[in-house]
Length: 195
Image (tube, rainbow, N blue to C red; front, top):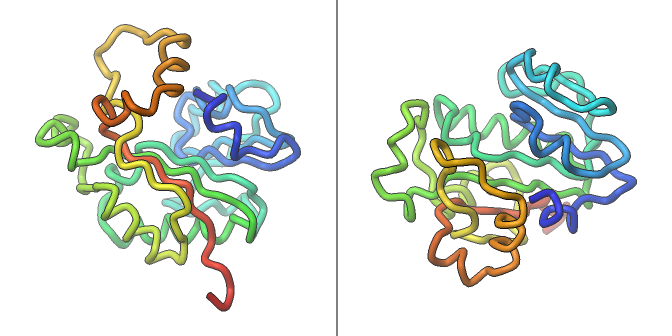
């Protein structure tokens, strides 16, 4: 999957994986500087050598400077936050660390395509679709460059480990996304000054 996202990740750049968990994504990408950010300090132990770890304070990233990141990657996190204000604070924090040419890569469950299955996870608190996700980004002065309402399948929880070759094939056939996709994917950037 990292291959698909590599088109947005400059090799000489800095990428932040916000909500990195066990590091599946940040361990697989190539960049000059890779930073995994998570609320759980145990995430540090699962990151590859060369991946920095920054523990969050709430949704803030005190260890990351302004305009320090070329890419922020965040997957399936917004729906777990307690309220809309927290979502807006997090997106404004992304805005803070992104430079003018930087990008946010954002994935999330899309209630419009999951239907009631969206609520099968007890920790899903907020409802998101690709439309509400775009609206949330706008509250933090982030504009959507690319919007894919149906991208990845909803979940692989409980499924056997999917082969990497199958994931690569899936990502090469966007027509299949329209049938199986139930997560949105956005590429967003800071709103240009004066626009």
